[in-house]
Image 1 (cartoon, rainbow, N blue to C red):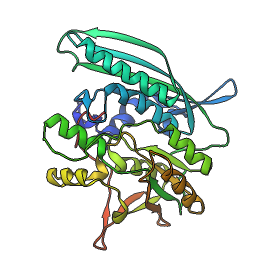
Image 2: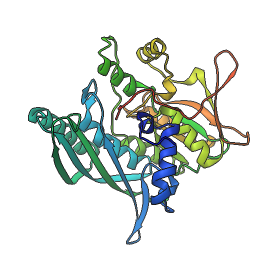
Image 3: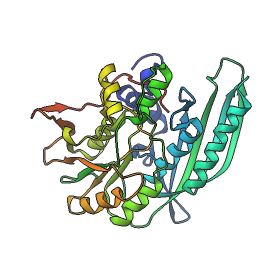
Length: 335
């Protein structure tokens, strides 16, 4: 590993994994943290809870479809929801640069309150620090969240099984490409908008359709490629994707082709993937498609009978392409 931190260490790919394993897990590792789920599953007073924490440093702070405040609430709620938990409480801490606009801060706080209200969570604690001008890029937000895990639900990154169907709830890469275009003022037109949204009501709908879903993950940094590689590793399975089935907006496809990027590796903030036993996949898919956040839900692949840890893509021309864990950095500071 490098001697110094680079931007690649925050990309959600190979360097991020090395940093987590060789520094944080080396010292913090325990039976709960080592599971590497989006939220820790805790048992306190005989109740099973999920607990998560996250930090948000997106640039720009405001973008089409949201801002850093909305992102902070949605990101925290989603980490709890995809762990099979009902989100209950959030804390939020702000590190603010001297000279930051109070009007902008109010906009950010208001959007956080709105998202919390819509998702049914309460922001119950917080902290504010102000640092000298130049030491923070406007504002950073740290959150923690806690939720109650539903009874008879066992969602875990290590639970994928042969025959599982892989479902996503909509188009890929919307958030990352929106941030890229806003940051670099590319001036592109069309329906390019962040998918930032709280997914807990969608997850509830999915679990009502079938409570035995094996894995649910939200595909944020590193995109769907990073998430699927993590699931492949922890479940020790091979996952085959179908290129024809990957849902990508024409605007996202156009920008990624122009910039030489792959939508599989682009961040999302309102998309999840689920691993569902084949016998129940159609029921879950139909339920998702009736929900506003799952209208474009589709099956993108399957866990195969092949031995080993691998993710590959069956291409439109009849070949196979390996989908590796992302290495390096494509889009800095997308959340």
